[in-house]
Amino acid sequence: MSIKMIPLNQLVASPSNVRKTDAKADIEALAASIAVHGLLQNLSVQRRSETKFEVVAGARRHAALKLLAKDGKIERDCPIACNLVDADGATETSLVENVQRVAMNAMDEADAFVSLHEQGLEPDAIARRFGATTRHVEQRLALAHLSPKVKAAYRRGDINLDAARAFCIEPDHAKQDAVLRALGKPITHAGQVRTLLMQGAMKASDRLARFVGLEAYETAGGAVSRDLFDPDTIFIADPALIARLADERLETVRQDLTSQGWGWVEVNTSHGALSGCSGQRIQPTRRPMTRGERAALAKLDAEIEALDAKLKDSEDDDDAAWATREERDAERQALIDKTQSWDRDLIAHAGVVVSINHEGCLSFNYGLVAKADQAKLKRVLAARAPEGAAPAEDAPAAAVEDRAPRVPKAVARDLTAVRAAALRQAVASAPDIALAIATYACIASALQHRASLAVSVAAQSVALNDLPGFERRRSEAFAMLPGEDGDVIGWCLAQDRDTLLSVLSVLIADALDLVHEGASSADNARQRFADKLSSALNLDMREYWAPDRAFLTRLSKPMLMEILANAPSIAAKSAKRREAHLKAQAKLKRDDLAKAVAKALDGAGWLPDLLITPVGAGDLAMTADGEAEAHAIAAE
Image 1 (tube, rainbow, N blue to C red):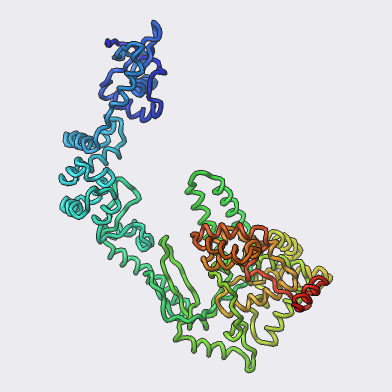
Image 2: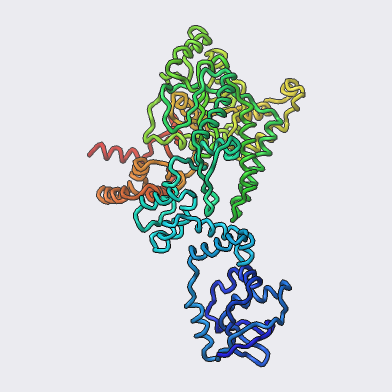
């Protein structure tokens, strides 16, 4: 092997170079290092022609040199020191150079960087000299300042690099050594190291810390510990200060709610369950939206739908789009909240529970009634009802037989929302049914002195994610109406019966409020109302809903097993095969069981009890075949 100075523009890449992967990794960093320190290791080349030489070892150095020439930092024909090898040994030379290479130990590199730092070089200057990032140099300097015992343990292999990095979050060598002694060797779990070093501190991801905010905490003089190796890992040094700042903010919220007339306000900052509350609660009233509010709601819905489509198709996390979507969602909820109001006489005997969710946001649970206030609230309601008035629909006596199996409240709410949307669309196209509902609501209000839970006598609009067919009919109907300042009664008197019934159908449909959680007598009243309405409309919910895996995974295993046992494909098996199949399925995890149930129900038209339309009286008749089979069974 001989050494030869060869102009850079005569050097070309060689197919004999064994490094195929990461051949150009970190080229800019390497170029920066060569610019400062020069080429510390010769390239190995073989002659291709009189004027060209192939680089068989040193492809990354070659690429870095070409980058320097491209940037004008060296000449394109700059002479480069090269080892000239025989063609027969080119591949072996490349292999030896790449295989025998050993990466520098992180602690050795850290000690080297700290030596330069002690000579007066700042981290950014060190980074420029070695083609590294300033953050990389700062991290290596942090490792260099670890306790000597921790550094020695790393060199012996008792600690891996991740764990050594974790020790850097606490600069106190005594604490580092104490944790080193407490943990068994080898130490490989960085999270365990941080937890022991930060005992007594609070994670910045804690819901109270999120609620207060790091900026407010630090402004109040609070100290934090940040992990140089993980920017998302931050510890609060003074949890007591976080608690005090949270209490101050919550007290402002408490005073605001009290000024609104609520009888009591309880702040629940722990995970404990509330006690002392009854199952009763009061509900707000809701006025119909104005035309302007309805237009604003439609605009927000369109924006949210467009954002959802964009986020669904995007492969990258678009933080700006997500933030905008959350803002539009908050604006939508605020618009809906404007239409509701609370009866001050009733809320004086009820309260609000304020809690903080895992995202650090406030959550309000309005209208709760304490057991001690039940009697007072009952007297207020009794004083309002005329003597001899019939009990309200939500009276406890109106409870109906529980449906089995019981589904979670959230599932019941989602299921009944699907049927509510279907019923609203159906009523909008059934003027006679709408007229019957309106008459019922008027009778309940004028003669029975009570308000219907299922529909407002004032035709108050209820916000719901409606079906396109109903949205279209509502837009068409409202387009016929005069403006807000127009002569509404004059318009109504000038219309024929069919037009009035068409508009009435939409207004009544828009006022239906049938979503519930299946947990109270009021929910049972809504369910009975929806059942009767579905029967009158011959509503078949199989046209609007079908069980899928997403729905089934929300149910408990006992519920899933009961559904599976009654699935047509399973029920058709012999008793022995059916029992064996169910026994095998019972061993599955819930998600896998939900998948099996979804497969068994595919195409069967299964519906949960909450969505089944009851059969009306006289709707069934025995066929000739049915009568013959019945006689045969009786004869046996």
